[in-house]
Image (cartoon, rainbow, N blue to C red; front, side, top):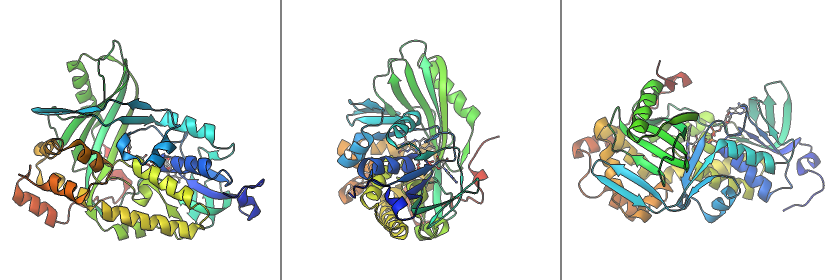
Amino acid sequence: MAASSKPVGIMNGYECDIAIVGGGLSGGLIAAALAARRPDLSLQLIEAGEELGGNHRWSWFASDLSPAAADLLQPFPKAEWGDGYDVRFPGHERRLSTPYRSLASRDFAAHLHSVLPEGTIRRNMEVAALDENGVMLEDGTRMTVGAVLDCRGQAPSPHLTGGWQVFLGRHLRTHAPHGVQRPVIMDAAVPQIGGYRFVYVLPLSDRELLVEDTYYADDPVLDRDALETRIDAYCTERGWSGETLVSETGILPVITGGEFSAFQRESRIAGVARAGLRGGFAHPLTSYSLPQAAAIALLVAGHADLPGPRLAALLDDRARAHWAQTRFYRLLGSMLFGAARPEERWRVFERFYRLPESLIERFYAARSTRLDQARVLCGKPPVPIGRALGALLGKGTPMAQESPETTREAA
Ligand SMILES: Cc1cc2nc3c(=O)[nH]c(=O)nc-3n(C[C@H](O)[C@H](O)[C@H](O)COP(=O)(O)OP(=O)(O)OC[C@H]3O[C@@H](n4cnc5c(N)ncnc54)[C@H](O)[C@@H]3O)c2cc1C
């Protein structure tokens, strides 16, 4: 590490060493990793929104993270469940022992404000343009920097195929203790409406719950009224009443195939490194990206002296390797969307949740071995074989994103 009394960037004629565009999950974790491992470098973390992280809650299994990634997340204040989680399907319930974690964006932002040097974070500041040598802010200010990282989040692409995971979550303060002891990661013993549907429940304290209604759907449409009604019904059945503290919605891509090189070409800005969803770093089937965001943050911190174009090439290579390594999950996604009738999609997950716990951990961490893959696929398929083959051989449904408005709430 180069110790210096003067920020390195200023010595090189830059206004800062590294500009991170987008203060969401990946941009924030990169900033945290750089602050911890390379405090000699000067940073700018530029976020268009009012606050870093937006309105989110990110959850993960302890087994998703390497020890170094767990260390990176360790100082963030978060909810932790040490005694595992439950899943429920029609006729099958299971308790698994893997510890679970959840980080609210409010805590994410507070921690970043406390560890990043003053003047590092710029909020309410949209970046209008970025290139290899710097960024242009919306107010017309040009900032010359050593390297630029594009962490602006999901870039919808017509080059990828798949479906959608649509959800509405309600953070509830209950009038009486709710009695839920541990997270319920999938309660699929609920009516299957519109696709694979499940309810996700996180007990945040004895009177606070996150209740999220999720479904895997063919179209990126969120019907808020329908989801609110279903959450009401779910809570009423369990005797939970209270006030809503905050709610969150998501329409996340479940990627089943496509041409990754075209996806990369489409959002490439010469010499600018891409991380997070912008770079293609997510689990194709669960749409989760926290484990990948933490791994990339550590990679960037370990190569922070590289010039922008070389950092960009490094992350592009890593993204291609991630795409190649996650083929199996896209294949399963094709079976889910292409082969299973919407009301039968739960069977794919129900069967999966009968498998050994270590295999399930590797699956969520996107580290399934060949043997794991064989075990997931062998036996009597939960979907008709003819339809499964059709789905695997077909091209899949393009995530037709002529405009971002196709990802929308139903009127
Ligand atoms: C509601 C919700 C819940 C989720 N839950 C989980 C979960 O539990 N676990 C998990 O692993 N994943 C989860 N995900 C999926 C994924 O991890 C998140 O979407 C994650 O936030 C993606 O990280 P990112 O940094 O790529 O993008 P984001 O976190 O979306 O960050 C992008 C940031 O860039 C900013 N930005 C965009 N354009 C500009 C610009 N021009 N100038 C400046 N700033 C700009 C945006 O305002 C935003 O803050 C969830 C997603 C959603 C939507």
